[in-house]
Amino acid sequence: EPEVTQTPSHQVTQMGQEVILRCVPISNHLYFYWYRQILGQKVEFLVSFYNNEISEKSEIFDDQFSVERPDGSNFTLKIRSTKLEDSAMYFCASKRQGASGELFFGEGSRLTVL
Amino acid sequence: LAKTTQPISMDSYEGQEVNITCSHNNIATNDYITWYQQFPSQGPRFIIQGYKTKVTNEVASLFIPADRKSSTLSLPRVSLSDTAVYYCLVGDANNAGNMLTFGGGTRLMVKP
Image (tube, rainbow over all chains, first blue to last red; front, side):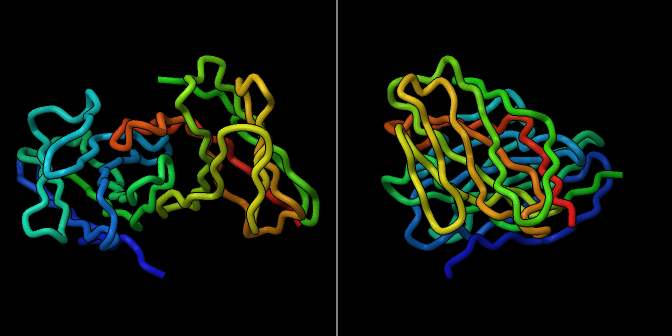
């Protein structure tokens, strides 16, 4: 069964450092998403991406965040200057054409900012 | 965006049927209702989706009344492995890139 893969599974970084989280969505999917989940809290939407541009973004997705689909297979989330409160599990998801709510999630990347 | 309200937690026993209800009073005409399951330290997993009436698949049923202001996820004969958080989401079927927002979810604990 095809799946969304994410790397790294866990990253520890110092406050102020740049972090790039990588995702390989399912190959025939066209819509891509990043969510985050702070420990013990709910899953929060960050951004959706379609046709090489951002479709929607939440208020969490400020200027410190950016997304890119550099090579047609990877989908990356960059945090330019990490803050302590960026520590969370970051989930990538993808969706095929015509499937309104059926997102396929990766296993997540845990980011710890010290 | 349609907001959803679910019970924070529920307890059940193995073999019982579990029904989790979600309220979405301001659901829009184009919104579908989707349920996800999440285990600790894992990404959410799609369970079922519907627009109206009843939908059934191999793991669950989804009941949606005519006014669509609520929905009920039904898990038949739960096992210990069904212990998880269950999320109800509503989203615009015609806006594929839309902000699908997770609410607080319902933490289901299945006991032996």
